[in-house]
Structure formats: C-alpha cells, structure tokens
Length: 107
Length: 115
Image (cartoon, rainbow over all chains, first blue to last red):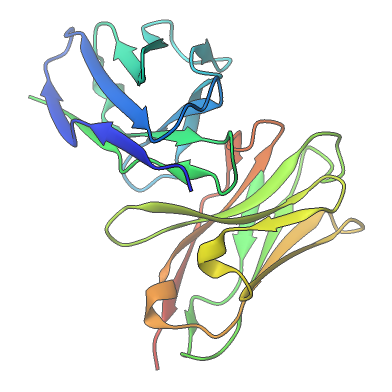
C-alpha cells in the first residue's frame, strides 16, 4: 500500500496567519491526492481534489499544490472556523490510504 | 446524504452488519464509489472497501476475507458485513460516497466490540 506521511502533526496559528502543511507519499500518486478536514465531533469533509482543485463552496483562502515529492495545503489568512484536523488521502492505487493528520488550532 | 445504521455494540467473534442509506443520488450513478472507512480511537483513518456503481468490489488487504460490501439498488442502500470481530475492529464506521471517492461522508456509527 502507498504510505502517506503528513507534517507537522500539529500547528497553532493566529487569526489572519498564513499556514502550510505537507503530505508526502511513498510513491508518485500523480494527481490522485485529496485534502479533507475534520472538525471536532464531525465527519471529514472534502476540501481539495486532484491536488489543487477546490471543491465547490470551499473558500478561496485554501489552496493546494505540489513541490517535488511534497503536496502542500496552504491556508491564507486563517479563520476561526478553519480549526480541525486536516488529512491528505491518495487514491491512485487501492487501498486508498490516509495520512495521520495535521491538527490546526488557534493561539 | 449518507446515513449509517446498525448495532453500536457487538461481541467478539460475531459479525458486524452496517447499512448506509443514500439519498439524493442513485448508487448506480455512473462512476460513483460507495466506500466504508473506519476511524480508530487514536483518530487514524482506514479505508475498508468499496462497491463501485457497476457492482464491482474491492477490499483493503487488512480486512481481506472478513469484509463484504453489498448493495440493494431497490432501497438505494449499501451494506458492510465484517466477520470474526475482535476489539481491534472497534471504531467509528463511515459510509463515504461519490464520483470522487471521498466526496461525501455520513455522520459515522460508533461500533464497540466487547463481551
């Protein structure tokens, strides 16, 4: 199975900060990379698909990209509602595999 | 929308049966996946398996031979059976579906395996 590794495991930001988190896969997954966010007590929700495409309704402060072997999720100007755990997910090969998550909270 | 249902407590060695009722889209809509994903208490997520719109299924090798995903097209429901349960199967089970494999998630069903 393709391994998915996220970093950092947690980060703390102030409202208005720009934050980035990274996901690395054990082999190239081409564009088959999603980002989901899970708020406390809720199921995960899809934010970004195909590395960089925002799902309808997702604020434009979110962006996804790739730098070499790293997939990057950026939030420009963090808002209070962005708190939660962010997971990257690959579906190039089955089984679909998830990263262990990056937990974002507010300072 | 996706809604899971089933028992919250099952005994070791027994079989877990969960149902996902899907509304707003047919489970036979072209290109759609209907998966079961579980989340352990430590928050890690594990994809269990899926049934494709065509009826094809695929399972995570971690549960191979114990998991069975089926569908009832007349009820627009997808089901999961997981046999030979152990405490390690205790988790929140999510029904997940859509054209993009993690498009839409149900609220989740907490399943505890305990005698």
